[in-house]
Image 1: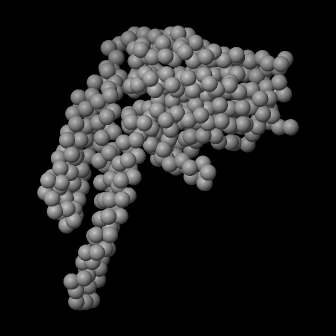
Image 2: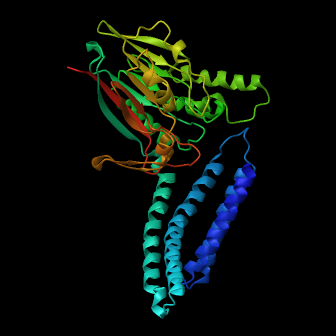
Image 3: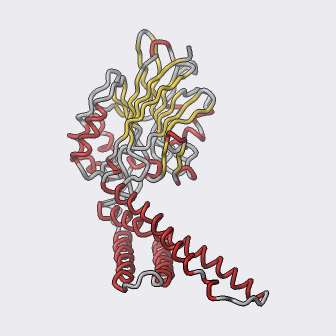
Length: 411
């Protein structure tokens, strides 16, 4: 099935390339440039096909694999823009031709409107430059363009003693994708510069394998210890679901070694369990579930994780996949006041301009809660956009995130 999809994509790109060749040749007289465009597509499609056809699930996504995805996007996005404009113009011209044929209207030379075609060409070229520049920036600088997002949340049931309590939330490290130690060290420094009482990590420390973290353990172990602890849960990628194992024992061994990473970097891993946090003589509960997703592994057990907790105690839930909140958590009678999640990465592609309320990503068509803060009655969820990246080796408009949440109660 995968090979059929790849063949279908190759045929589609071939048809588009032929169509655009005849559209471009009207404006581009240099055959070198025209054939250069075709050769670039041939090279990128061959490079991607090779990486996909010979993808080794026992190794996972290598830098070459991810770069093949990035290069494909680099040629596909601008071509899609040109295709849209030229195809729309051709459809309009075809309708006009059909109308003339039906009503036997004489066709004058200016009906082909060469000036309009030229205008469309230059308009499409200008618009195509935007994704090209964005994707190049995303694969070089954007993926390490860390943003600190600060939010003050007013929560109805928060005990007075926890007023001003600060949570630092990170997620989705995806260490198997990271490729720049210096940039990651600067991101760790940025984390350590923040003031926070507790640090919570909501899963996907690796892509698949425990050894992906080997060279990063000394780096992430530099994260400072929060006064009330550094805690973590697992994400869907931490279970080794996306590879072929020789045996269930090998898969389980990989999972156990991933669990053993967390104490090495100063984190306590919560596996369907909770901890009581005490401050100023008052208590809240920190609940950590294993991954539970609508489309991915369902290892999370909310009832087990909250066993023995009274409904009235204020609860912070760590759950990797935000679909868990939407489908189970927000209506659970145990009442979870604040949920922290990740997983979506905001699809690492989108547009966000907070000053004018603009926020869009393809991710929103898959996840109702895909990035930022969402409220349901008196309950909240924060979907962190992620620390690392995966599949596409960059970020465009959806930047890597470090969130600092200050808790407040209703006066």
